[in-house]
Length: 464
Ligand code: ATP
Ligand code: MN
Image 1 (cartoon, rainbow, N blue to C red):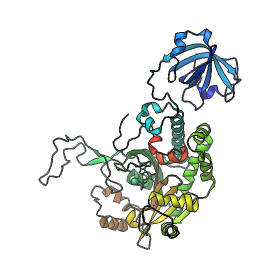
Image 2 (cartoon, rainbow, N blue to C red; image 1 turned 120 degrees about the horizontal axis):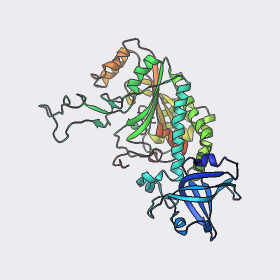
Image 3 (cartoon, helix red, strand yellow; image 1 turned 180 degrees about the horizontal axis):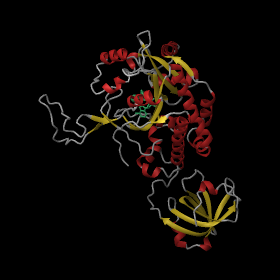
Image 4 (cartoon, helix red, strand yellow; image 1 turned 45 degrees about the vertical axis):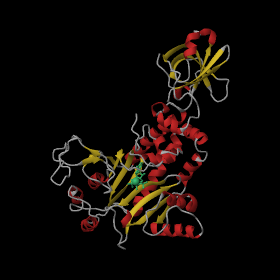
């Protein structure tokens, strides 16, 4: 007989029907006469209660039904007299698919997140990680749906690349060379002509530059793929391997770009509220009591549009009134997370879209403003998270772009193809990057980015 998934089973009311459920034991309790087994199959946060009359089953079998064991249960669907569930399964037959050794790490409730990270292979079986992973799936689906419905083309940019988009280093090298016997030139520098690609290559830190090629041909594209940064930052908001969504649009100005950023995030958060109710209610109860309220809030409030220069004066005002920041505030500085969070959480109490940054703290490709000092970068700052989106209108003028590249001494010999977009039918365009796990942090209320991806990669950590 075909099994019923628990998510479908709990909606059924055809009491008396014969059913088969399969899943893992969450808890077992009982009296002399009956045994109650809470079974979960991952299709929902909810368990189904299996009721077994002890007299009907072999004692040895019942003994082996411990937390973590995997069962196939055949029985009758019965309306439940107990609170918290509408139906239960009265077992007629129990097959033990897999017993669970006594050292099963997820046995106890309320283990620390630190402990669960060390057991990331098993933490997926817990309520919290089940909820987070189902929401993660829904968010990925929401993102594809949003862009598909708005006429964007899903565009695949390479993971192995010879260009460093941010010009900032922090890249993982890709090589097949023998690292113990490297070919070097007379000056001692490594030669790459004998390497797989005949040049130095790395894992991508962003698909943007190739994304711009897509947008200036197809009109609007988005990428959604793995991204790698060897930043040794060890914060609760940085991973060495994360997933980034990068839409890029032709014929867009700063205001329209900000409109897309806002509309897109709201759509994703709305989607979570509409499609992940049970999991969000669980997280709201167990992880963060203000989660649902915060998600509702984001969907219904208008984001603040704030000029960088104005943001700096708000922060300076705060300092003058006695607010203590770890890092000093002055025009020209890059905002630290504490500054971003002050603006969002204390001053405006709303998400903020900031723009008009000093060119010195932003990437070479951002469109320069007429003042010669600022660029059309536009970051979205969120409560709890800080920066969730980094974006900009791109500099489409060849001469201006080149002069910035020269000022910054960016090696562009491998980037001729990027510059060609500004020579052959250049057009105004822009886009942004959203860190998928930053969005996940916001939507789940989880505190550490290591806990919203199945198998996190961080400095010193590549287990599983
Ligand atoms: P931050 O200042 O937080 O390190 P960034 O300025 O380096 O961010 P961008 O280069 O603009 O970020 O990347 C775009 C987006 O990718 C960011 O807004 C963020 O959501 C996400 N992101 C960047 N670095 C990481 C990382 N190491 N782990 C997870 N997400 C990241
Ligand atoms: Mn960074």
